[in-house]
Image 1 (cartoon, one colour):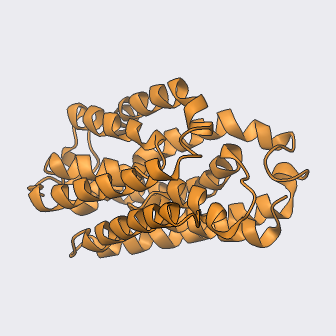
Image 2: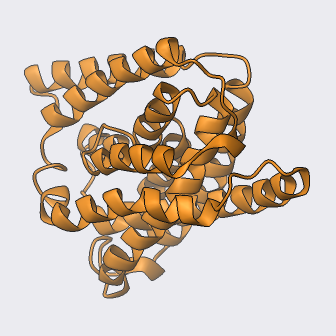
Length: 266
């Protein structure tokens, strides 16, 4: 059974890693294994994602109001979000079993995904033209970015990392790429919760207390609060800086997992 401290720690990990391009799902898989904690299951991970959903809902509501007043919203933003969500929803439906089993129990796959997508993020960050603002995003951009989001069903890919990379390749500026990634997270996290969270309502995944126990409730709040922090930090950082620190972190994390596997410590 998971205790309260473990739930809170995983909530903080989820909140910090969800919007930074470092893969929250990879951390939620590796951290419990590293410390010998019980695996709460995919349903608990998605519950923590709903904590960060609260954070991004607050951000997007403020972003919508400020952008609407200044005329900086893309035409048909809700349609763009819907279109960009379809590929990820299809991938999540078709690969639901793999996401709950083999993807979560294969640290080598997570490590390789962290390293590979880190290199792709570095490439996108240096090759991207960065001339386009948030208001210029089109249905074609949304579909391409949405297809990249489908890869995030694999822990280690990072939903934010892969969508930001795709946006950078399309010439979208770093802050605008991060903003659109936040918007795209809304329906995909909400939909995943509708599928997985009923399991917690029946007490599955977090001991016998399920969603109403202290590990889940405090983990949810920790994910929401740390999610606010990570959104604020990322948006301020990318105004003037590249994603290089996140690339380095991904490479080190992937290398650490491979070394831990080789030495039988994970």
